[in-house]
Structures are given as C-alpha cells and as structure tokens.
Image (cartoon, rainbow, N blue to C red; front, side):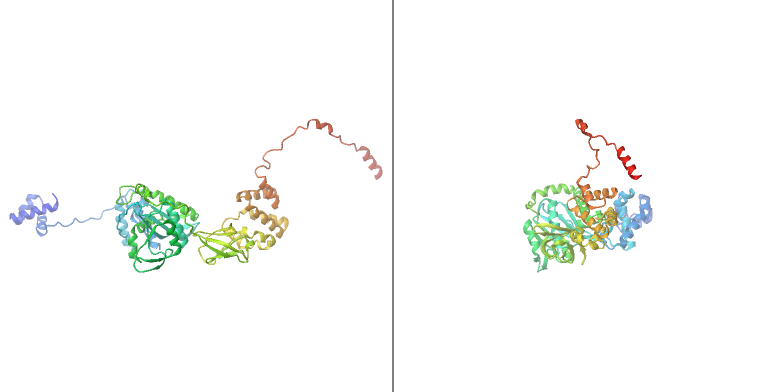
Length: 511
C-alpha cells in the first residue's frame, strides 16, 4: 500500500476503533513516531532528497562551468547555451552518457550560481495547412573571412508544418527584407495566403490606430507581385507573442546551430551552410508532434499559391554621376567604374549585398556592397587606360592597394613588375605591366598568371611574350618538330667552296 493509504488505516484504527498507538505500531510493524505523524496530519511529509555524487556527469562538470562562464561574458544573450545544447555538446564532443534530465539539473543550479537568466516558456499554437507564415529578423555574430561581425538573419516559418528558411545579410536594409522574401518563396516553392510581421521599418512607414499601417511603396509592390496578405502584430513586446512560432524558431535555430559562433570564408558560403541546415532540420520531429517536418510539409505545399513567372526585382534603380576619379556615390560610400566614363551618368542597381552599374544597357561594374560610411571600393581594371599614360601613379594607387588586400594580386606579379622595371626602366616597365593586366579582360586569371610565370621563368620580360604564351598555351614545346624526307631535293645541294687560293693571296698582300 502507499504511505497515504497506511496513514488512512492508522487514523481509522485509532480514532474510530479506539486502538492504542502501541498496538497499532505492533500490528503494522512500524515505529510509534509514524503512528503519531499519521494522527497529526493525513498527508505524509514529502521524502527528503539527499545529495548524491554524480559518477557519470561529475567528470564533465568543468566543461559545463567553462561553457556557462563564456556565456556570462558573451554580450549576445540569445547565443548562450541552453541545457539541451550543453547535453548535445557533452554527448557529441566528449562522449558523455549522462541523461538529459541530469544535465538540465546541473545547468539550472550552475546558472543560479553564475547569475545567468533562466529560459522562458512558450505557448504552442495550431494553424491550418498552407495558410499562414511568419517573418522576422534576428541578430547573430558570425566570423566571415576571419573577422567577427553581427549579421542580420531573415527568417520565414511555415506555421502549420514548422518548415523554416534562414538567410544572413550584413545590414538590415529594405533590399535585405525584399531579397529575403524572394529567396524564401523560392525555397518553399510557393506563396502563403497570409504572412505575419512585426512593425519592421522596411515594411511599415507609420503605425496607425489598431492594426492599420502606412506601408512602404516597395513592400506594397512586393505584396502585389506575390499576392499575399500582410498582417502586422501589436507594437512592442506584446506583439512578439502574436508570432510566437517564428520567435521560437529563430531562438531554436540560433541556439542549436549558431552556438558556438560559426565561421565561414565568405557570406555566400555561410548562406549556403544555412540552407543546408534548413534542409537538415526538415527531418526533425517538433515537440508535441509524432511526424517529421517533411511529412507535415507534404500536406502543405499543394495548398500554396504558385510562384509568379519571374521573381520580384528587389534592387533599387537610380542614376549616378561619375566623378573625375572614376567613382559613383551610392548611399554613404563610393564605387569605381571604368575611368573613361567620368563626367557621364550611369544606371546604378542597389541590392542588399551588391552594387552594379550599367551604361547604355551594358554592365560596366559590379561591387560587393560596403557596410560602413565614406568607404571606397575600387577595381584596378577600371584605371588601366589612364595608368598607361600616367605610370607614376601605379605603385601608390588605392585600387592596387585594395587588390592586394583582397588577394587579387598574385605574388608573381610583383616579381614580374620588378623584372620589367629593371629591364625597361620604371615608367616603361610599368606600362608593360599595365598591358599584361589588360589581358585579364579577354583571358582567365589562371591563364594569365600561368603565362606570366612562364615568361618570368624563361626571361621573356615584356607583355608581348605573355600574350604569345597565352595564344599558344599547351602547344609550345609539347612535342619535337616533325622530320620531313627531302627526297630528290638532295641533288640541288651545292658543295662548299675551296678557299685555299684566297688564303694564299691574303698572305702575299700581308707580306
């Protein structure tokens, strides 16, 4: 019997039947203190928990302390370790066999000791298939090209299936907001009837009374292109609970995949990694469900509105004047175009991650969009024509300096330039190097570098030699020249003359 049932029998024997305490204790084989406790209160006192050592988890205790200590020093609270993430890292990185519940208890106790904030609770919701999605941005630190920076991650989540799309941008701009939608709809393969937002500036120009909003023209054009309905949440923290699905999704994704801080070579490679993680998450089973995200998505995708024939054009198109330095100002930064266009206007397409320039319908410049202010993005190729006439400005040019920083200037070019200047002089040698650089416009970079390396190896120090090697790449010295049978032509061979008499004449003149 349970302890509460035992208490009931004790109380009935003593109070109703009048049996003494000693007789009841002898009958049930218990101490008299237990009988007195039952007579004092019908509800037994809870069992006292004793502190026991952790034979499995104790060996990994210092790892948990180290991770939580890093979290305490990390300003980005949303990229702190959760108890589940700690358990996963112990399991995957150190082979710990402790139960997740044990890890949760240790993490909770350590958090209180270290003064870390405990997790919050969320309310699950039910949504009809193919009807609604939620959109939000969240911040996360990422190491790109060896430098750590804060990137803004666009997230769209299908409310019914829980399928997600994540994409990172260097800045939270309207172009990033629009490009995120275009990429997300392409990822999902269709358009939801309704998309729920908070009051992001790229979409909302002014908050009016209730749920009414004055929307930006570009967002209205995007909505018209894909024909979905936009619903906006309340302002402030209260509005976050109206789109709890995407709030929970971005938190889960950040804690599960972006802890510790991820690292990648370029932003494009990082976004490719995010896409792979999204597809991997399609195989997970959400809490409280009995099927994978993929299984739920299979019911949802036939109900989406088909994509339009062409994606929405997200770039802002403006006109830019080319200054005397061959630059156009876009926003707070400057970008180079071919120097021959100075004094003219070019058509500028401003996207979230790129700036492109067109002149008379032809692409003349493409740059990665700068994130700071008063910066310059210059390409050496845009200044080659003027450097032919002004070779003295080559060594100290900002375009050459940026080419070195970006790794677009091979070390063999410095050796070849030094050899050209030693052979032809500083000015003419620089002009020869400019002629070599012009070859990049009609040949691949790898082919030009190989030709320069070959010309340097054989001492052919001029641009013509590099061009010759490019034209006959793979054919020079590949096989010995063929031998031809002269046949009857041998009869036309003339014997060598006898110069004995001429030598004798020369000796008489000398005497």
